[in-house]
Image (cartoon, rainbow, N blue to C red; front, side):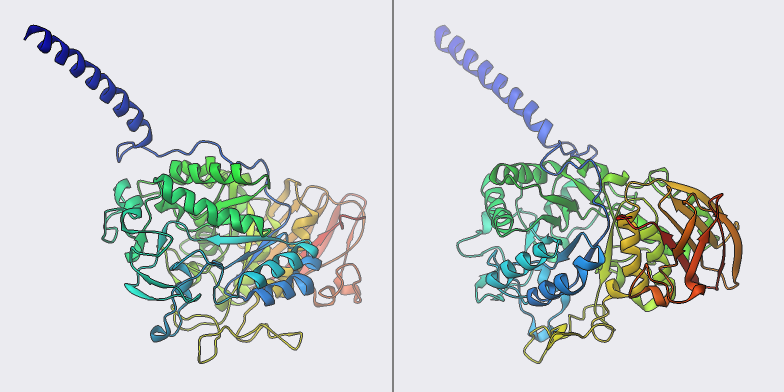
Length: 512
């Protein structure tokens, strides 16, 4: 009896020791709600931002994106293009085929309303031939919220049950919408607007996601925007990316959607170990400055960057607006959009001239209803941007990336890459100017009065072209009007006259 009791105590001790060790290990992986899930460095750690800017061709078809890479993006200095989610999604004809049906996955079959697998591969090859990278929007936090239906690739599904892909046990047990963003477990395991939340800590689920991302990488995709990254624990996302790294030797650019207004439990810096992070506060702050909300003026932008609490510049993906923010979705803030016309254009000129972050240019379509999908026919098929080889931009398709001032400034950014911000000047209000080392100089007059001033530029003496004048839109180095030419004297100074609500920019071409 004593022997049995002693033996039982020994076993009990071993079990308790085992449980203690397990609890200790588990605690390092599953912190309390007040602790941070900090990602460890993975595949996506980045040392420098890419050299110019990329464009989000929101809801464009694969055929149109391939043509745009060849016709415009490559020759105008764009680094890359972000494409809409390429996987099979729900089809909501009874709701007018809204844009967000792309963000409700049905399967990882490459059959979306942008095109099929063959068209996707062809598009990637065409873009690469034009020198343009392709980043895919990866929706891996969840599957569809719709109870049942047939997807864009013909797959039948039910919520929490996707044949040959996911079964109910592959989803988190919190089968209700997120109620508070002050509870870490709610944000990462409950349902974002009813979307079936995947159990992203599961080895089986992770393997399935990695198979999907690796397949896209094999097709030539150069990187991923991780949709709803804030709703995936940072270390779980890191595990997925590490496994992806083991599956491919390609360098993939990773950037994560982490909306951090500063008042919630999950913080953007938890995700730095996984790669770049969308800095949502950038677009809000810059928009508020250009809108002159409160007492904000452009003169305050001289310290814009990490001093404002923003993501470190080499890991920051920035925008004036994106597909969510231009519709008022995803939290507060007043973001400029194409509907603001000249003011939006000037804000983009600033973003592309200033050295902070990696800029994403928005290219959208006209909409009145915030749920409105892209231009479609009566059967929900997306209408082409190119018809008989001719672009249909500036009508139903807004094509902000082709707006002359924005397109010219993408080349400015590429030419001034790596150059510091120098020679800041302001009138104390809404007229500013600054240089980019000894390569470029920009002046922005957001006020309602003309600006006439002599500026110290830092540029070498010579005659430059104001690339924001109409004559420069076809050839930035061949100004046909003397009024478009800017002379920098032996001291690096130039005298400029800028109309109200206008800008000027000059730079030394990289090849010179």
